[in-house]
Length: 254
Image: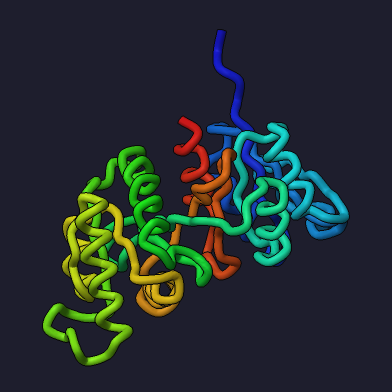
């Protein structure tokens, strides 16, 4: 007996055509369900194989169907972040979300980065948990399991500012406890050999992501949420398409 076709939901808010077009390259690999408000997708639009699920609150509908198993995985797409992620936290019973982003440089180098949310990854224990979960994802994508830890300066900068000193000390501790390598502030070296890079904190991680994806000609392929029991891939509404995010969700199902 053949396995049931997997169903992946994706949010459709702004720019519905971009979301629909993202499903074309994956058509047939799995079923794509588009969650949107009534009238978001105009009559006569090419659905590209997407099955529409119209709902007055598509953010709630997407999360509810994910948590109850009506869909196997979900991608935020172009639904608003605040409402969607708040619904996800409530449904999953967590007070914060931990995400690990799959990024690609302008030269085609792929790596995982975390933390990427301003409220994520602030403690040593948080970072150790991200390392544990990130190594699992790295294996799934065939990325090196070597982990690079970043800090706010070089070892030679000790004494220049107390925040730099704290960042360096925390990175040294995380590297030792997490069987990782402290690359100091040298992200350009870490990306050459590491499949997972841990930023000093959520603010700097978010800045790294945005600089690479929106200023540096790189790409963000989506950020799986790793501290909930279901597969949810967060995305930016500024992403050029969501094909890779859909494929990312599908890969995590395997």
